[in-house]
Image (tube, rainbow, N blue to C red; front, side, top):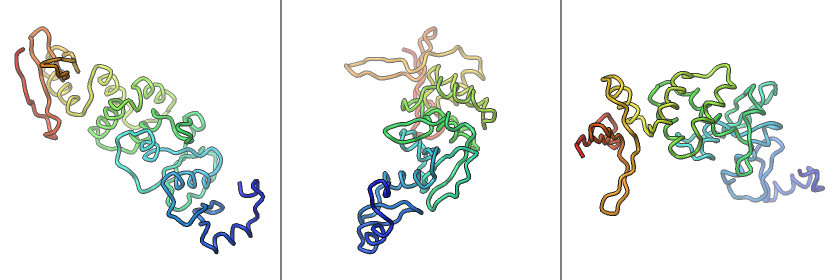
Length: 239
């Protein structure tokens, strides 16, 4: 880009010496003397990793607003056949699925939302964490369940594959949290209860609310208290 603008390296060196330009990575420079914003840090990482590089994993999750712990690294994925030395501050991943699992979102070269979720699932050990990630991502409309299933179909290997399939089917049925999933598995199915209707809209005194589980035949509503952080029935009552 510097060559295209007609500037030589000597000009860049003089700008660095004058404090008007700073080096972020090998061959990557930032105009100005202020600390680089996260946008500049991400673009510098992509440029440093070269052709075919896309944001991925935790960094992609942040762009798509998928609820997941932030990372101090910029996560970048490159095609598996490329030899890239990860620059400082960059966590490098390689994938045989690129460029297929790449897209562009808000100008960013990035893994698709579905592939981002599956990449993060591959880093998790606890099944409850997998359930939480999938339900959070789908509840916030960051990605649709069918898109995750389609993306997983292109993968020969995927950690927690069967669990992902099962949870996605339950999400389509109305499950929106790990607590609701526990109730479905440990109570409703384990004890042979009828299948309840989930996320049923109700209006009372001008206020619209949602019932977690509604058993029409028995005129019974089950509400789950997610704030307790454990399986707790807040209310089981007859309408």
